[in-house]
Length: 342
Image (cartoon, rainbow, N blue to C red; front, side, top):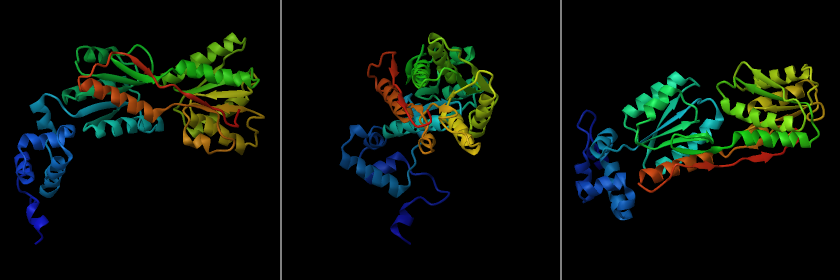
C-alpha cells in the first residue's frame, strides 16, 4: 500500500483537522489558518508547506465554522435575473475571477426577472451571513429595500447607473440609446423603429429607448416602439423584422434592444432575400461575438461586461478590507461598433 494511500484519511474516518495540518507543516494552527485564509500574511515557503500538508491529508476547511468564529464569512452573494443570457454570464465571470483570487466564494442566485424570488434569495443569503451582496440592477421591490435598509455589509448594484443603495458600477443606458439613434440619423434614416422584448422585465432596454426617442424627437422624427411578447432571441428578431416590414411608417432602419434580436433579424433578412442595409438597416446592443461574425457585420454598442464584474468585485473587496470606498458611481462606458449592417 502506498504512503499516500495510508496518509490520506480512509472513507468513514474523521476528517483531518487544522491542527493536524499545522503539525504536518511544522507551523502553529494560527499560521496554518492564515496561510489558507489570509495568504498575504505569510511567506510563500510557509504557505507552500501548509498547502502540501492540506493536499497530503485531504483536509477540507469548514467554511461555515470559520465564518462563525470570525464573524465574517468568505461568501459573496450574487443575484442576477437570468442564467440563460450571455450578458450576465460574462459579468459573473468577472466577479468570480476577482473574488476567488482574494479567497472569496460567490453564492449565485437567479431571479428569472421575478421580484418575489429576488426577495426570497436576499433573505436566504442574508441568513448565510454573506460578506457582501451584488445585484444586477438598481430596481428592487419595496420589500427588498426594507430588508436591506439595516444591513451593514457592502451592497453592489451593477449594470446601470442611478440612485444606488450603496456601491454602483454600470453604464449609462439612456446615453447608449442616444448614441445609436444619432448614428442611424447620421446614416440618413428618418423612419427608425425601436424593437424590444418584454421591456417590463428588461427595463434597461426601456432606458435605451428613452434616449433613442429623445434624439429622434429632437430631430423632428417619430419614434415608434414595437415590444415583442417574449424575451430576446433569434426567432423573436425574425418576428420583429417581419412586423417592421409591414409597419405603416415605412421603416428603413430597426434599432433592436439587443444583439440576439438584431442577429435574428439579419439572418431572417438573408432568408427572405432582403438587402441589409439596402432594404433595411439593422442595429443592436451588447457587442456579442455572434453579431461580429455574421455577414454583414452587425452595428452595435459594446458594453464591457467582464470588466464591469471585475471592477465591481474590486470595489467590494476594498470595502471589506476596511479601505475607504465612498458611495459613488463608476461608469464603465460603452463603445459604438459600426458594422456593415447600417
